[in-house]
Image 1 (cartoon, rainbow, N blue to C red):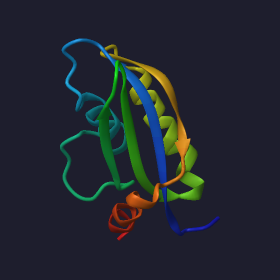
Image 2: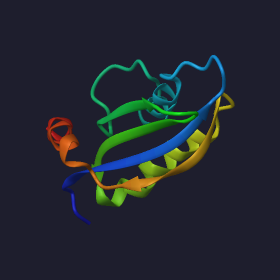
Image 3: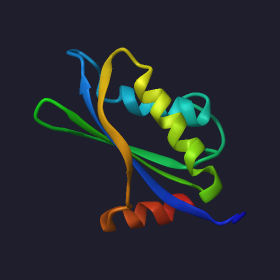
Image 4: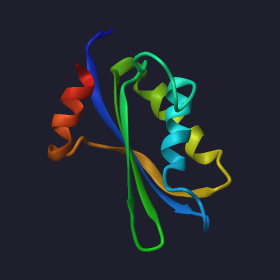
Length: 111
């Protein structure tokens, strides 16, 4: 098992209910990964959430740092957090590669 940590991305298309705070999915994912969205100390899995509103849907991205052996667990936590909230519905969700513009962020999170 490799102890080296790598950058991964999990991206979802969501439909937010009217009046839903667009920061809600990020708070839910951070709580799932860290125990609470406001926590002390470093994250077990350093991560960054981003929201991009679109036409009738919102693209939500979590870039996270983990060991390859932890990747499935982290993705499952993200999925549970996104699929358990009544304020939005998941239209599509899954892994995608780290995009070149995201690499500097991934490098910072990995330090």
